[in-house]
Image 1 (tube, one colour):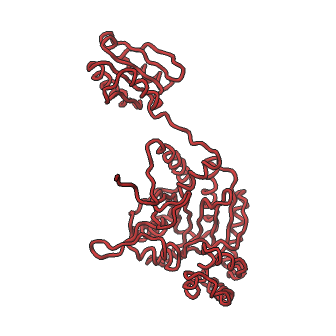
Image 2: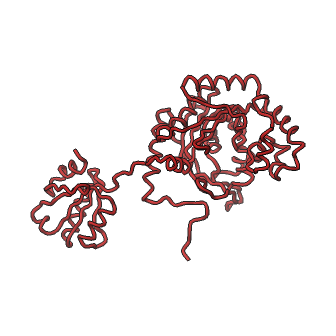
Image 3: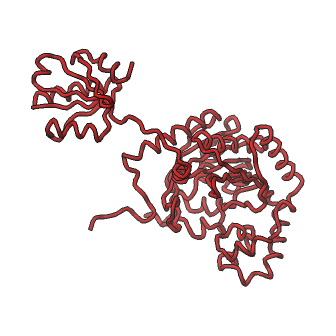
Length: 417
């Protein structure tokens, strides 16, 4: 029996790779417009980074991480999300000594052991924005603006932005007491995980996916009634900046996000009742994992979820011309000459190919059709001896007489110049 890919993983095949390249290219360009630069962090980190940064009471840490001991008996974890590693890199490499804010973006695989379903894999991929060094609400608005612009650049128009203010550790202390008071009488009805959260982090109960817990949480107190004056002022400024940018939003007091590092601003972008992007401010993360107190804000966007959203919105990604020219051949001389010309044309930037299977001319032309070659040439002894051949445009069958020595003319015709 042939070995198969692990459950929850998916191969990206050559026929579909152009879609990912298109998405990544657009997102890179958008990030650049917002003055963000790329960061790449390791695929695995010390487990402690996620336990301290993401939070021991989160679903990610409690249920979903791929954690194992290496040969040195150290506990390491495959990257469970992108923010904590970016924060660790910010501290370790002294980026706080550079001009602030530090604006970064990344594309990264993310590993979570969870139920496999549509748009949710155990290895999926994220595009993320992380900005360190500023506590201003204007930066929250800018990060949200970047996320909203990204979706609109792809042609997704039906978007709903939901925002919330989950306060700081000071005002959350009062809120947690209110939550404990509310859930106390319903404690026996909570799932086992939420029972463990009751004392340590009752806010996590609001993020539980269990149907019974979700139903119980509907009438729970809302954080907005408990935020301090400073956190409230930040939230009001955020709304002012979003209004100034013409970004419509709705305040949803039940958004808490699934990771413990969030403070103050949290947001989600919805398309047809599906969350396609989420993020917020995490002012305490850097100090939590050993750095100097540094404010930060960012978001994560799943690439697989984005592809699914484009598909469900009937948005097609333009298919590139994979092969501009296919040079078929007859006989050994034709094969040698086709290989030489293909090599020379590649140096001039033409995407071209030739036969490596010993196929008949008829089979080569069928192959050229299958790979969507834009143009074809057939080389045999006659063409080689005369130094001339015919270049055929496959779309309409028009043919052009060309000299095999005049590669510049071939380039011009193929490129449409």
